[in-house]
Image (cartoon, rainbow, N blue to C red; front, side):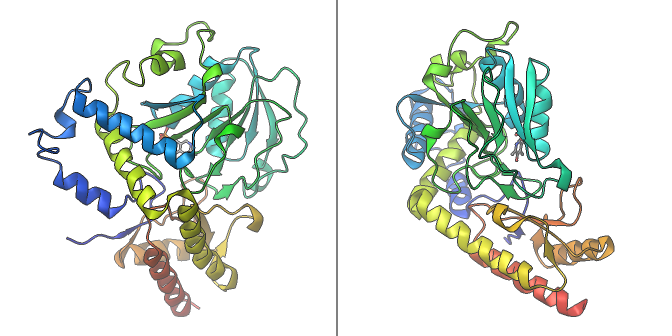
Length: 360
Ligand SMILES: *Cc1c(COP(=O)(O)O)cnc(C)c1O
């Protein structure tokens, strides 16, 4: 068996310990005589799996009792619609557009009401986070929406926007569990798990209880109503059982690593290795304003598309996979999520140094 260093933006690298444990339990989950894939979601055994996953997530993120945790399907993209359907009581919401995912959410919201663009960094190809300390926030907004870590462009909100008392809704798909978070600052935190937590097919929604009501937009499908899912503890219909089971294992892995404080330290160390090199390199350049750099997604370029392509091809041959930048940006992107070991980043930097010497 040989494993590569996988820098994919998502679905992405998972901890090897988790994969091994899942492999061990594949044929016979703890004496059940069947795989978790094969068991009823109404069984006692599965009930323990989903309850334990929720308890561990609550402990990791210090989620207060007045927030519900939902394990849903449909990916982060389905939440682009679910959020306005459930929360747009005045049919007016503010969006901070810092990249493609925020823009998609903003465009989706327009189908349900007035979506106001409160700020944008489109003018400089989303390479920075706009100043959100004193935005013009209309009085009748239902919520303010952000994409907290911009997976494609490699920026991250280091400070949450000043919403002036309005509800904050955040897509944290690509920074989920990468550092401690104060859940009380948000009305809704949600993310697809395939970036930092588990296999594609699960989206986790953490939502303040008072926001879960029957007062949703007309025509909201039963499945997209948070109340349906909350009342049934995410078991209204068959949930993505196996995915949730893997998420639960990753939660335990993070707990064993020391929790979110330790995760943050580990992620800062890894990112520093790569950013320090980009700052001193004569060939490679980071594309993002320094103070807004993501710890998770690191885009960089040589400035020459042919050389970029050569780098990606040679890196792949050397065991560094998925370094090609998003098709909308070009260049390269190294996603260095929680499960990417420090050695992976060190090896990548060593390879980049060698490439730079050979192509000087
Ligand atoms: C990947 C990603 C999405 C889309 O996730 P899907 O689960 O594929 O819908 C949305 N937002 C962010 C920030 C992402 O990184």
